[in-house]
Image (cartoon, rainbow, N blue to C red; front, top):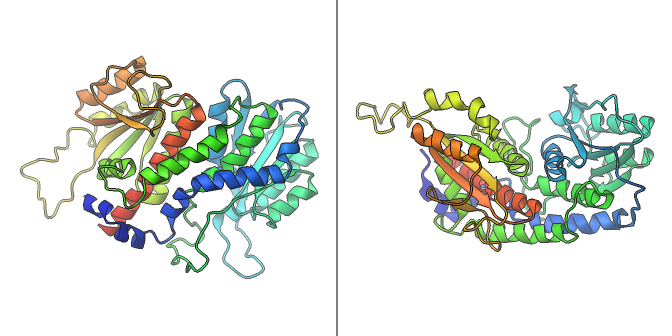
Amino acid sequence: MLDDTLLDDPAALQRADRDRALLALAGSGARVRTALRLADAAGLDRLRPDGRPRAVLVAGHGSALTAGEVLAALAGTGSLVTPLPPTDATAPRADRAGAPPVFTAGLGWQLPGWAGPLDLLVISSADGDEQGLIGLAEQAYARGCAIVVTAPEGSPLAVAALQVRALPLPYVPSARPEDESPAELAAEPDLPAEDPGALWAHLTPLLALAQKIGVTQLPYDALPATADLLDATAVRCRPDAAAYTNPAKGLAARLAGTVPLLWAEGAVAGAVATRFAAQLADRAGRPALPGLLPQALTAHRGMFTGQLGAGADPDDFFRDRVEEPDPLHLQVLLLRHTPGTPGGPLDDEGPAEVPEDHEGPRAFGVSRAHRLAAAHDVRLTEYASARPEPLHALADLVALTDFAAVYLGLAAAQS
């Protein structure tokens, strides 16, 4: 079991946070502002599109691919947004300095057969050394696609972007102290953990571009306001905030010793659930199953009647509490966007935990989820954001769950 008192020890958390994950998350708002400023300086503000593309293809891996899924959720059915995950992998080559290559450098992508001059390809990379993305840009150029590339300045991908007449946008890295020593070598050096704040470095230029070409209907000040919300969440979830006032620490403590089912209502909350599952795996080493209501009810129904359901009693009198570890149990975390809900979270606050006896309106799928959990004595915790703008609700929920995943991982590493 997790010793949740470790969450109230800021010094211990700082010692455990060797790769400065909390610092990266705290700087998310600043990265949004910097990415907007650099995108405008790179020519995005001077872009005069002839019309909306038939389809927007977003290629990358990790958080870059998550950014494409977020754009698809925000665009809805009005525009076709297709994330392009890698399709194969080859052995990567070492760089000129002889450093061991990372696995992602050998990933490969394939442009769909229907992609052509009416479509836009957006390539996003935090490293810029993926040969597969360079090859994808060349494929798109040969077919006449419009191309936008977000990559670190001077990287091979950024250089290739100029050769295929793409619009190059700079990738904003995480801010780190200049005198900081490098983190210790990972157990799998070719599979390093991803920067937890990278999502906003990928998503900001993508959304700014989507606004410009009419793929989304975001307000003109939606992205600067998002940066302010991320700053506010970083203050609420700071390491020296006590667990009873820090919503991320509270969520981390709830998820300890459980197998979370991350259920979501709506496309925006669904993108958050998928992101949270990836962060729990990467940052906390915990499995989690994301699912979108109502289909999650049928897909995960068997979990409630199996060994992880209420059948395993944590208060079993005959269990050997010395030799046998505490059993794992299901925990349902339900994420929702409920704009304008009476009695919901205030607009100037982050996402709030919804009380079990809350009498606000619920879709039938949400009500059935509550009944299913109650029938099998499985704890269900619901978090909702009542902000009217979907992007701001997404920022609220992503920031909360990102911090929770990092806190859970740090506390578990000390236990």
